[in-house]
Image 1 (cartoon, rainbow, N blue to C red):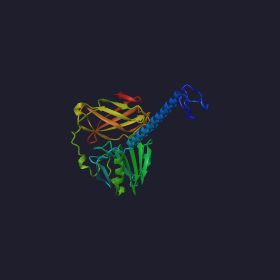
Image 2: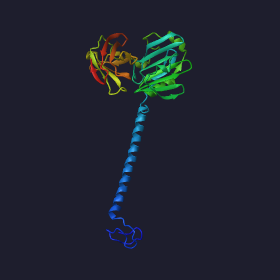
Image 3: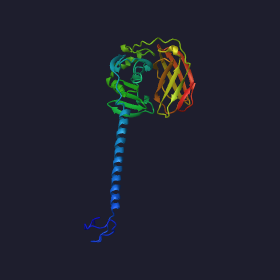
Image 4: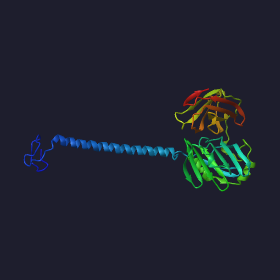
Length: 323
């Protein structure tokens, strides 16, 4: 073993150099020092690699959650009464409700009863809309020009203002909703109030939205179940049983949820087709701030006629409950 001070050879067991008297570092200590340094370098590399992987995963989650990777459905221009807007091909927007007391207070709500009803649930057009109509738990995620994009769980709500009118769009596909907001061209909205008969279709229906599903025959709600996730950010799923003899028939279903007597949702009119096993599967448009303890089901035929209603009491907790 060489002395690190003068270079003289010494025995491996020597504690001091025989030539200059300097303290000697045993070989085992040198080896341990090298090993410890190697371990520190290895651990440092593992930590840095872990941080990089975590950043990549978080970035991927953020991109996915932003809706950037979700494809936009095919769109085409459609003319409605007093306005024009691009809508998903195969969609069919029908007037679901209205608030038109006079020409200065117009709000018409359209429900999508055709294709891409999950991507775009509904839209409202009028001259008296405001951000107060946005879900109270929705958060503003983007703002450009006079357009505001809100998020609530998997649902997006877009509010946009124009010269003489405003629109409110709701759905799961933010690309489609933003495209609709950007494509909107207003007409004389003050004339819209005289055109709105509750439950009537828009003046120009998408020709590709005509359904070939069998006409609805008389049916009733025979049973079913409600399922809620493990957290309040999860949507509520309803499975309504009407019998396999109605398989393939077109219906519209409306479900109001409430908790302690307070309404949790707006009760959107959702077009559905009965499954081969006789069920109507529908999820809530939004997640709720509380688990519902009551559900009111309204079942309509394809023409909007009421077929059956059912009220269901629920335990305000997560899980599946049958009725």
